Image: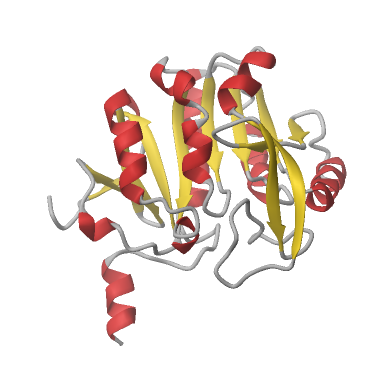
Length: 257
């Protein structure tokens, strides 16, 4: 009972796209895209089998705004599923699969897998341990965007099972240049294996002009600064946006403000 009440008070929900606020964010972003009426470049880092990209593509298609989603999936077997899915969903021209992992440095890294299409696969050894490992190609976001002529990312989504901060560390040039309009990242107990804290994300993003909040089914719980109460390692997705975008999202008042 105590755990249930604690989760309810913290607005922590199961990792379900339809109820955890991710669908809400996509719908609001689609409305913003229609209003701005400019081409959108979106990066889906940790695309797995492509469901997040599929949902977002369907939302954006309704707006008539041109868009391109680059879907990054490093594990070869899962990448094969991703490419097949995009073809069967008729999204091959709009969602472009990329068989590379984004990280804080380029090169080869060990990858831990529980199997093809598993959402738990990671560049960090998980606490429950996986026997299957392979080597995957890594690039930094700064490097990849420069090579592909991308100077502005409209929306960045990161879901890399504990490697999210390393993805952001590999995008410091873009972040400091204002080249990423809005972004979301996943935070959960897998950050422990990476020896990272939510505080690290605040220290990286606040100085370059972002406000950070937790995505919930009712809106965004924005924070003025990091607080120890936030360091729970509970499953959640966090949104980081410039101040001018805050009115786009329904805001939830945090209990300490």
